Image (cartoon, rainbow, N blue to C red; front, side):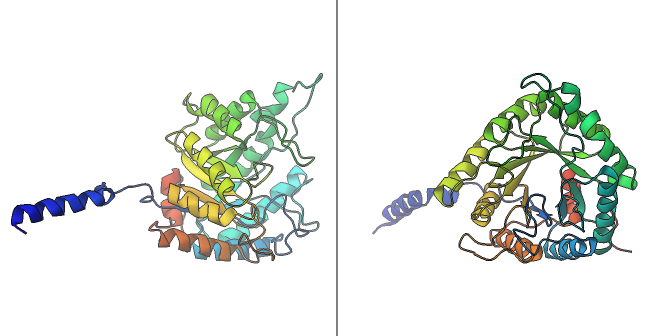
Length: 345
């Protein structure tokens, strides 16, 4: 075979491997933030006996998760006497919140506080199905809690990130009803930003995601960086069956994601771990994991998760195996635009 024929053969062979000549894809080049939801809200010890409920237990669980790679901590204060996160008066809730945070900070000094369930007064119905709009505004529902949390310490240490529940109708499957209309969501964003709290938008369904995009993202109301959640299998969000259906639900969310947000996944049910692995590959900025959102480690598990650190360790390991670095708290703070906190004495 003469040289021209050899060269031609080589060029023809290269065409078979055209994909290898593509420019490097940067989807997984960014660092991954792991948010540990260690104690939960709806799941309690009747479902998982390993749920931490005292300040000491929470500090131990969050501290070990921090060691394993978590740089954020999402939580709902629980009554140490009942183990429940509901029906806490404001003063008691604030005291438990502070006790938990102080215990966690002593173990994980620079972890980011991501506060859940910030509404302290219920919305009110008026005639028929109409809602009293004043009852759903942030100044009524959020301010009594958020303003006092902001006063607890410098740099909003006790409430650095807070969630606006962006669900615009009754959620099915339980007696729990969640509702937030356009004025409510808009006022949440305005109020939280006015207090220096990073906004986390949490739409429960695909339609809610479309509304959030129209109401607060396209208008520029939510100032970057803003966290945008996608929920599957948790808190009355869509609950796909394990397997291809679960991935299809996730892919639908990904196709709808607007530009310029930090995408966080909240994934529960038996298929949470494979979905989390897929989300990491698809470029999720933050993955929330832990006992709040999942009861079983693997789709075929029959025993409850016994350690939040084990969950974080598995997720961090998967990310690293796929070539993604896990963000340290200082790096996560830079990504989220939050003040740095001293990590040691």
